[in-house]
Length: 236
Length: 108
Image 1 (tube, helix red, strand yellow):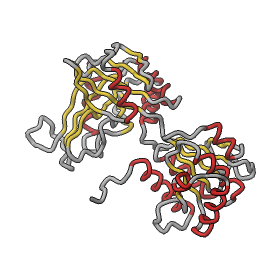
Image 2 (cartoon, chains in turn cyan, blue):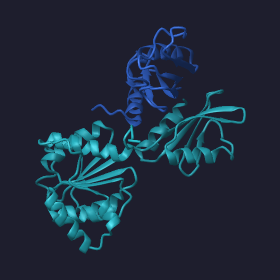
Image 3 (tube, rainbow over the protein chains, first blue to last red):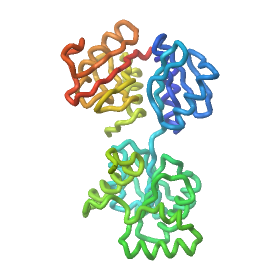
Image 4 (cartoon, rainbow over the protein chains, first blue to last red):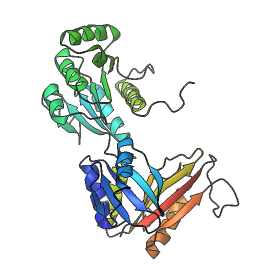
């Protein structure tokens, strides 16, 4: 790999742009292609081949592809998945490192500056805007999960409304079943549709009987990964 | 912080390069059966033999690192195949019964 392509690949990942690295397995020449079909590198790809690469990026599909006499390896490098945590609470302190361990870019949103401190969240992207403002700016995409953990409708409800209007692949909220029912009623009167409300994971997390904040963090993360990947062995 | 994602692996590779240490990248390009790492699995190997990322469940990384040393010395990519059979050119196999093909290239 030429240093130039190595640097371009790293830049794309840092900027959260999905790219494919196409390697001609015969010559070793490599080309970096983005989701719009723009390419840079050692060998210009054929016009007929390029759409296959763009489609591979769209579908996160990797593998060897034969094109005429050539054998190419397409490796899709999607941007890191992202987790936006609303509520700089005790549980979030456990969820931040757990999610990072699983490869997520993590941000914590809480306008209460007594909670959102670097002392409580070292080396963490802390956002002290109101959740709806922060989410409007961050624009959750299909690689983004949003969880609301404040237990306070004043923060959680606007966060949920914003998240459910986005493409986020996972929207979860902390709270017992009784609270969830009341929350759904409130959100319904705010104009959210049944389809939107059905997207809410609440109570958030897999039911593994988690008790401590760290255990609940594991349950939440497991549920997010399940939503992302789907079960490996589906029941027939 | 351990982060098993491409960004973290490439960042480690960049740090080695910044220190003037050569780096090879090993890509899983094909798998058959129950291979522990999917196609696209990535491992960076430094000229000093340090590794970041993985291409299997720890079964063949040692052998890949050895080959990466040759790739760095020669400046040419190599294809590696690993499987269960003893007839394979490789002493190292996959206990899971899977097979995989790896492409190792130097960063130049």
